[in-house]
Length: 115
Length: 110
Image: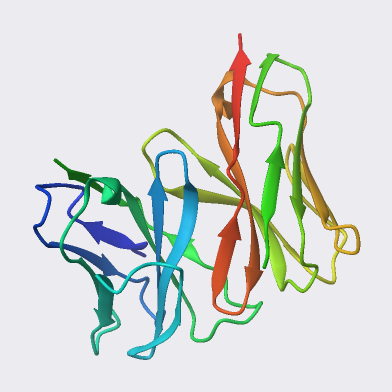
């Protein structure tokens, strides 16, 4: 069974551009989570989508946005890129809901470099 | 506001020694605590998950304890091997999200 898949593996953009990152959850999972791992800042929670709705959001500006499609895959969009957006972006998926029984499984990540 | 701290930030041991990694958190209202391994530039591999009602979990050479009242968890890795070299992250779960510590970078020398 396929795990969480993310694309692209690497993405290079220049400051001011927009980046789109994609995530396909494990089959049967309806929740998708996004995390940012920037150098020196550790892993930070970005967004949680469940059944197509945004359920929770971390402390990030509005230029970080996303959506979840009817097939439960998800996109993360970062507008007006800044140099400090350079990071590894990890996607995770779980069964529906945010409770203790729903373990998050992580993809391999997308490395975004902003020049 | 939940804060998760991992000590030490880095650790180097000779092969065969036992590893002890510490994680502390400030808010005991957690669903569970999870330990992950991350190799350079890669995603996360889940090692152990301890529900808030549990005291410990074991898998092979790995053992993790949880003391929710004091806000602490410890990951023990017995008889370390060079292949254990990686960054180890702990994360506490609240509604819908994981909050991570900064990690402990482990190097096991042959």
